[in-house]
Image (cartoon, rainbow, N blue to C red; front, side, top):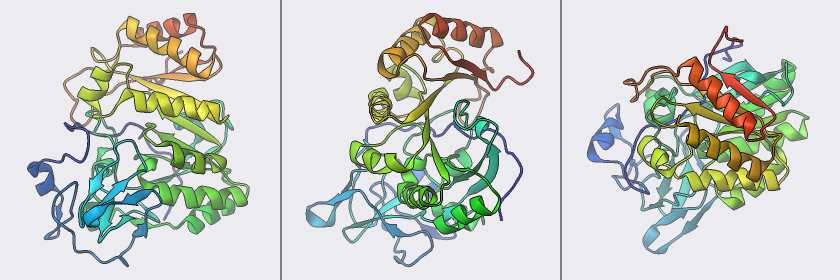
Length: 351
């Protein structure tokens, strides 16, 4: 069933992990045990699950290596796995030398939202989007607002009854039946359910339904080029503007996101950028100035930038909400840098 009501913001993703690729420790491994069976993750034991289970489909981007290993080529982590092991995302698995997505056609969240909630302010304003997400993420943000699905395995969500069948055909048909003009791939990181998103967006395009991706931007060149013709707009979370911040708070790399932004602009895709302002972490005026000036150089003055208010969540509950004055200062800095469309978010009631 689709929840036709609006839901709270769900756009931040992740928790903290050390190391570049596939580095879940034993404590994280134990946490993946579900109903007596442990799913193999990032170098751990094989799941033993059959390839005809719900959600399983061969992945689009990987290469085979010696000894039955595979290298995922979907995102910059390029996880190398043996039989039964999963990538950092927890939802892509090597099964006897073939790589599979485990979340195809299964939704952990399915709602109808205003397009402005994504937030996309300059793309079909005043309309709604059928919003879908599933399990997994390729980041580990400490401040994730949606960690209940982004940092869970498909087995955990399935055991909770949280995964529901929702094929690409069902999504497109639902959008058409309810006159919803756009499908949004959101809530968790849509890059990790690439095949599901790609097939849905392609079918949607053929039926004059638009698609938008709500992403943190960690994706390689070839998957981006293949997806771009079917994606009408992309919202990118630029989570900070230093590698130190990305390392400490997300486990990711700033350069990966910068590359994606520049690539999307070169492809002529409409993008909007969100910067979650976290007190003492990424809110220094010089950091905001450097970020805004880089956006002007890389993407132009007309790219909307949204500064959103942080609220304590997940593993980052020791910090206070962002003061309104800080957001107002960020707005002024960005405007002075030349950005023409700067918005503040998560501050209901404020002018």
